[in-house]
Length: 226
Length: 326
Image 1 (cartoon, one colour):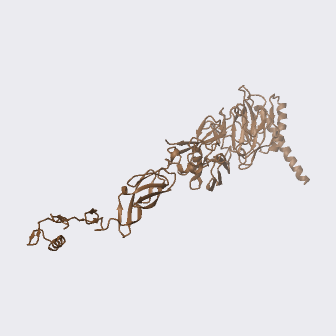
Image 2: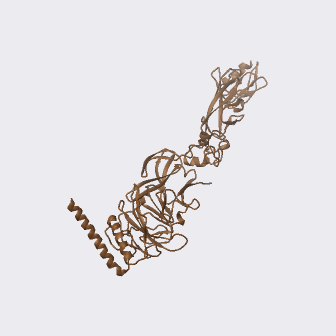
């Protein structure tokens, strides 16, 4: 897996994503990352939590009968516990010693999510992804889940990510998610662009520099007004 | 003349014949007590040891009271026993002693007394005063009556609850009789362990094991009430159905299943096995230590870790397997 380190600022990241999406179009990529829009779904601090079907984008507060036959995710207890169906494979920190008990990884912004990720292909329950360790979700701090879904009867994998804030003892939040429109095409955690070709990385970095510089200029401009 | 001779015999303490012109004293033999002898002119019969009854043409003797007249007036009959208790389905010998107006008394053979049961769980009393107790569900008072020589007496015994599961229709059904009688009364036809006397969906055995009332349909379905933290030191406010409880941890949740267990479960052969499932079809036993959080003297509320997932699937159901050793 390749990591592209960006500053973990959602507002800048979102702004950058729009710019980069335009760049991607300039680069001639046909793939698109389909964004959910900002959802900010509450994850109750209860045993039920929230059930999200990423294929239909429907949510439920009670266990849906098709949970394990659809690409679905169920964060509960504020997101400190996350269940996923086999149709939705989260990126894990490592292959679990016990099947179904993999720890979902908190991916840095810009992490490439592709076939190189750690997936089990099984239904999974993650209980240890909250903490202060590397790859864990810190309560109150947004993080990214990488995943692929296999909707319908096909075995095509569509990569995607989900921005999530877990909380312990209070409701967490599923902020948004995005899924690559084309099967097998990687995505970048937190970003709405396709992964550029290596030759395009230079342009990507340049665009990021422009974005960051523009953000800095805007900040300085605001400061001068005050 | 005979009296004189007898008196002479006593005074001489001799065992040989004496002779004179006016009388003849035949040789005779007295026994060791010095009082049994006979000749053609007299006879001497009397008791030689205390406590032996005897009589002759000129006397009557009853134990210990030489020469007491035979027609004294009985004034009191006193009953006694080694202990005034008898274990259920056990026996106890009752003794009778009669007292007369001259201050004398006599222990009566049981067969000299008329026995009867006045009340209480006594199965029978034999002709010689041996009482046999019925089965009881709790210590119970019984009264018996005896009569002799126109006096009678009553005796109160306590029949002790000594066998837990032997009472009438509740016998040998693995439920303690006193519990069944307390909640269901005597001989409830729906009082067996597999019955559901209050039709709340929980068998009487389940209600016994979880401390609820088998005669109250609202009791068995209510959840247990525990006031306290999962660390313990709380109070079992009310027994009832198992419940899930959780408390926040810095990076997660302490998620537990709480249930009521009898404190004497091991002695009664009861085994509680918490089980969990994702689909109500496949069940797995809970793992981890069962911790006691509180107790009310008879029951305790315990907890076990509630698994979030079972082989990748969310744990959605739980139950407590209850096993009774045969």
